[in-house]
Image (cartoon, rainbow, N blue to C red; front, side):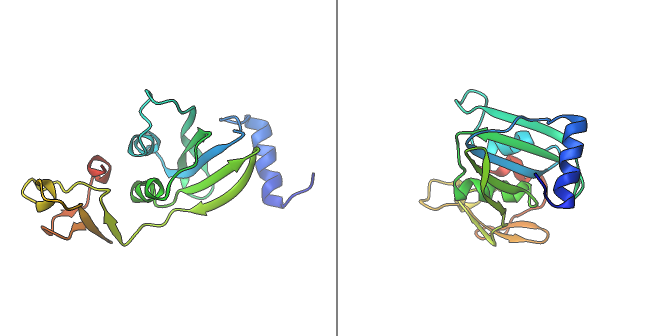
Length: 164
């Protein structure tokens, strides 16, 4: 089987090193996750270890594109858009690969939304979104971080801990 030069190099490297994670028949592969964030990705999409999903995780894998990366494979599950939006907040260079019959059926990068609704909890205890009012949290995504539209609080660090 002949492929591009890049594919040939990848096959040669895989043959030398062995695959770190075995292929899955159906499911989702989340690739190019920011190094060290794989377990956070699992947490924010609701996979806790007590759930039924079969998962594989590789952390701090060498990557020609981003230096080091994490990879997550989830067997027999395709991610919803709201889950992909959460991933984009902590792993903006991630790619989502939908696998069907051992082949990549669909591949797409994550897109950081300009507005995040109901995904992030405002850390300001006095914010109206943290009361019993019938509203969802709402943040504008900016270069410096995420700004709450209700109280103007800026989250610039540790976004993962504020994801609902």
